[in-house]
Structure formats: C-alpha cells, structure tokens
Image (cartoon, rainbow, N blue to C red):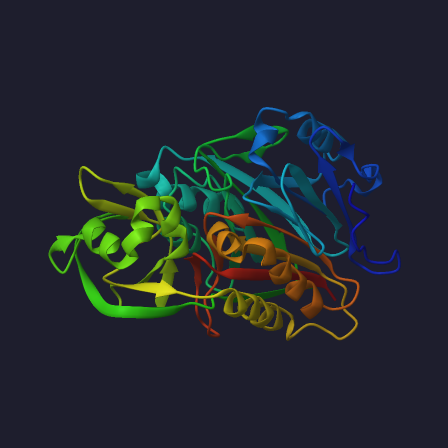
Length: 390
C-alpha cells in the first residue's frame, strides 16, 4: 500500500493529513478522526467502483460527522506524486481561521445545469465567502452553464474551482458524495469563508490549433450539428482519418477549440459523445467558432509546470498549503505511462511540505487568466488550486 502523504507540521495554523484507501486492501493509515470539526474540510476522490463498494466512504463519513465532506468519482486518483486506480485519495484539512459551508443540489439533466448552479450559489452566498470548491456529476451536467449559474449567484471576487466527476474512459456512471452516499445526478460544493484564507489558482492546456476556423452554424445547448453548414461529425471524421474508427474514444485525443459568442478567449472542449444518426458531436460547453487541436506529451507535462507556478506565485515562502490538481481524462490517455510525470511536475513546483491530492476528470473548473476574469469550465487542461492560511 502507498506510504503516508506529506502533512503540515503540528505547529502550522493549517493542519493537513492525507491518506489513501484501496479497494479490497483497506486504509493505509488510521483515519485522523481527532481532526473532525466544523472548520475541517475532507476531500475524497475515488474510483467509480466505490458506488458498489461504499464501505470506505461510510467509514470516512462516520469519522468526520461535523466536517465538510465532499468527493467524487474519477478517471484516476492523485495522491502525492502517484496516480492510482481502484483507490480513494483523501485530504483532511483543519483550518484555524476559515469557516466552511457545504451545499448539495440535484440536477435533472443538462438543461437544468444553470439553475442548479444558481441553487448552489444561493446556499453558499454569505459574508466573508472567498472561494468555492465544486464537484459535479460528470454525465448529466453541462459544465459551462453550471459555472455561469453558480457565479451569477456569488460576488465577482469569489473564485470557483473543482471539476466534473468521471468514470475512467467508460463514460457509464459517475458519482458525488452526499454524506456517506455516492449518488448520481447531484452537484456538491463547499464554501470557504474568512479573511485569513489564501487561495491560488492556475491552469494550462498545452494544446495548439490546426486546420481552418469554422463557424458553428447549427447547435443546441452542447450538441454540435453543423460547422460551416456541413455535418459536424463528418468533418470531424475527415480530420481524424483512420483514427475515426475508434470514435468516440479517440475523440479524447483531439479536442476542439471553441471561441465564445461574446468574442472572448478560446477554450478547449472535449468531445463527450457522437450521434451517427444525427451526425452530431456532443461536447462540454458552447461557443460560436471551432477549430481542431493537437498536442504531445512533452507539452502536456510542461503545461502542468506552468499551472502550478501560476497557482503558487503569491504564496509566502514558508507556506505549506493544500494543493488540489484536477486534470483531464484525455490528457491521461495521451500521456499513458508518462502520466505520473505530469503529477510529479506539480509536486516539484509546489512549496516544500505541501500536501497534493486530486483527480482526472471529465471537465475542469478554474478562474480564467486575467485579474478580473471569472471562473470557467475547461477541458484537456491541468488546473491547480492552492489553499493556505495566514
């Protein structure tokens, strides 16, 4: 079993313990139930199989009844410098000066995504709110309106980060935690409140566009039917060539760049599914103009280094924070045996003594670049959130 992950020392204001559980093997260390309290955050990122074997999740909830517990299923669990499957990666964070509030809402389907975000925002809005961590069902939610709805219910200065739950490369079922229960069609979040909280964010993709820019001439929500008046799926297959035979799986290797209706920046979007009958593509988000994208392993690993530098640039030199990395299942598929190099790059770029957890997702949520930019859904991107206290 994995060794204990880095923890801050007892003398620090922020107390962090990280540990792992493996299916059919148990916890690698006793649960630190003494850290339970109203100011304790518990993050749990686990394999989708825990929905059928939820005993470890029940043990976690029983050990931390007063804490803010949130978690979700993954396409790979990040613990320190390791990436695992069939495991739980858990961080227990006891804040000295930061208050927490947990929220949960059901979501009826993609069309309910913005309203679900607004409902979550209504539960979390309050004096002193500095940041929100959100974990969402990964198959029944449109991430872009979810983030827009959540942001619309909160002050502009509140940073929103997190990701969409995943299920490896199967796209069959995902879960988020509702207490001890792993449930589908739900979105969970935790608000962090207080002036002593310090939050850092970073994100980088490492992708480049190729081919002509094409107008999205017919779409409905996040279903793309036509590009320049032609069936979107047929054009996409033309670009993929022989790789088109592997759809929808090979779509994870070639996302699309979407330029939004408001003329803003370009966002990377993963193709989540195809419909041969309607010759359409389903992707995570909306936009006005699209181009194909490509990358290589070295560029992906380098982008992870840039993301952690962005997230930690304003931290005090002696800080030992919690580092939360959310990367994309598509990046893991491309990196293959080099996946842990991406994770090791984040660990190497974090301050000494930092605790690092995270997961591979179906969509990453992080503030956009720029001082006044709001939070957005990203795909095929390494996102890093850093939490510490003064």
